[in-house]
Image 1: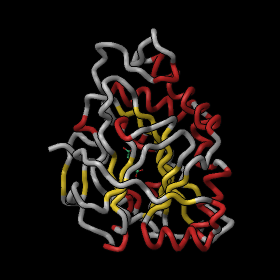
Image 2: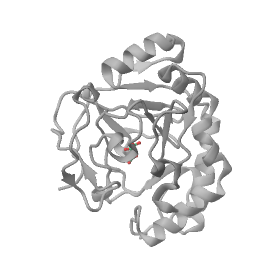
Image 3: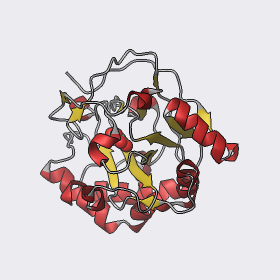
Image 4: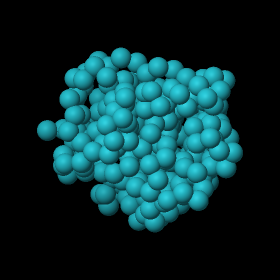
Length: 267
Ligand SMILES: O=C(O)CCC(=O)C(=O)O
């Protein structure tokens, strides 16, 4: 069984930062997520995309005959994924050598939205940077349905923000959210997906009409609560890399698990 199956999901409800903090908090309390179009300037996202893709190209992952920014996988290149030696060698460089990748979670646009959700001018950004390079033709590696609290722990008042590095239409993957699922509280993560990111998930009905997903454009951002069930959609393109970042925000001084202060995968 793969981590996710493909269905046509209804699109996300869209929020605007101009809606104001009260309305945004009411919206995330009702739905468990906020989806912003064009929150981060496209050029700021594309700059990080370029940095990440340059490292992918150096590793021989990309087709040199194609424009770097397309992120087209080299013909014959087998997929790789988190935890494998060849993947981690590139991912370590992404985490350590790219100042613009490192700075992205603290982008003023993301900080402003996080501050509104946390009802605080003072926002603590988790230092654990997380990026993902998801190959096509590798559905087993698709992130299964889960709640971030299972992985993050610490205060439940932690919000995640998923930001793709570039356009991410549904066939390239994206992220789907089970609307309203944060109200179920913390769930047992009993499902096991050995080949997938994280490896553990909650049992879900993939045909549940409460699932939401939309095409993401560069600069779009999806915030969600630590209890909101979400999953990646499989990269169904024949040859494109899906690039994304996971960013976490909480109020300073609240409970935090020591692991959230360490680098991702110990890299
Ligand atoms: O992009 C992915 O594959 C997983 C992202 C995710 O689950 C998260 O941001 O918590």
